Length: 132
Image (cartoon, rainbow, N blue to C red; front, side, top):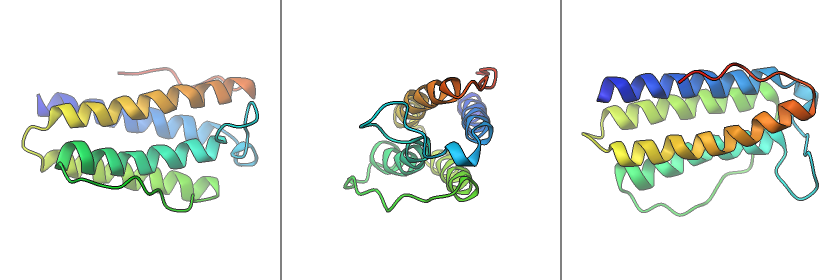
């Protein structure tokens, strides 16, 4: 089970980073409509969400929702995402069977990544092929 979930984690990481890479840096401020997060803010939310969901639902540590100031710039945001995914992998490997929390974390990522795909499409960019 653990190997299968780690494979799913790697697919999620690759797909999320693929989405992030496709958007041109100048469009990281894109908001398809007023009042929603920009593309970059969505990615920041995913990165922080990985941390928060991991703490709350994998480690079982009560953690206040307190996102840091968003990282700016495509390269820095992608680096933050890579670090978040690496931390999630390590947390899960050390968790001794907290699949529910791990799946909840991946579900949160999927939710926001789906929104990002809409952002890509508004720019006429074909998103990467989905791989599970």
